[in-house]
Length: 148
Image (cartoon, rainbow, N blue to C red; front, side):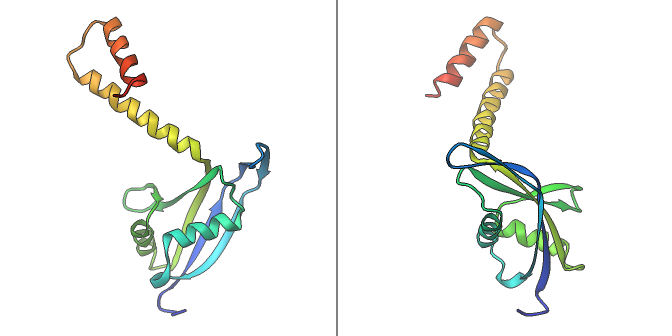
């Protein structure tokens, strides 16, 4: 590993309830996973797989990784190589990137996408001329249950 391109990665996994493949639940304590990595060879998918293996992630769950963005002053999600490199660059002067990992259900993300579709539908109806409330609710119900 080239000392000029190495950095420390501090991974903090929050406590969570693991959903086992047989339908059970298991409490998992919070943990820290320290790593020393090479900036030039860091790959987002490999890093995500390494964290998932370390905490023994079940097939019903996925990871959500965030870091503190100094520019926007908020936690930003890392979900690609580009965003990972942006986060590394932001903290390059101290050569240490701290990330927070949340374990979430895979179905939660699907539900969020579905709800996002409903929200778009509601916005669409709100921007249209306002019909009578009962007609609006009927149209909205048809739109949500029959998307075609």
